[in-house]
Length: 136
Length: 161
Image (cartoon, rainbow over the protein chains, first blue to last red):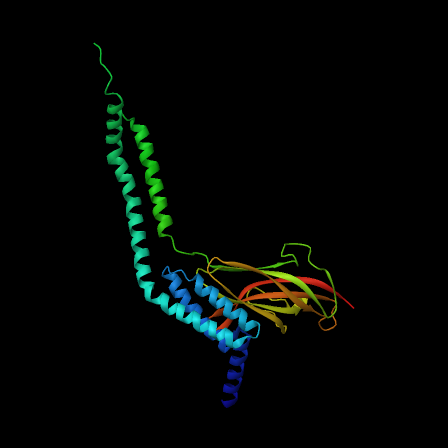
């Protein structure tokens, strides 16, 4: 029984190691958390271009061996995300409102055409012909 | 009726179709088919005219093109390996060969980036024809792991002494 468990665990470890995933480093995990946060803000309609630029800058610094500067850039990106988080809900509600108004306006257009077009056409028709004289 | 009924019906039909189309476009989801892309370009960052023969243990210049259409920002990694025909990656598994070099890149949604690279090339296990493999990995923040996207490029070169 013990032998079977050992084989089972060995097979499990082997199967997990065969999966195409690699454990990230501390730096990667910090960037990963910030990217997730930036993604959450982006899904609410917040412009996160500055955060992306800052994270890209941090990665470039890390890749060039300037690790301390990279972590400073990461903390700057973190504070940018915190600033943007405070307006995220407001941006989301504004975007939802704009979308709802756009849909309402688009939905009203055919009804407005159905009701107003014959009346406008008649008004213009009579206005352009009001100086006409009818002769018997 | 002064306004021809048929003309009025056509105008009304066009307005209904335009309105429905506009509403559908307004309410459509952000990115129904998320995907990523990796491309291998030559030294001038253009397609074609890739090096075919390379001196053993030398460096060659190429360019990598990356694109992110995941519908959200992504943290990517390009992994460079030297592989043989039987150790190429697939759409589900990465190459079993050792990583030679890697590049990390941050891309916003809908963004792409092209950057030059300088990679070492050498004979693998005495073979004179090797594949330069570039795999695209994306960081999964929730699992704290790099995940292979299934996107990869390769370039076959002949090694000379």
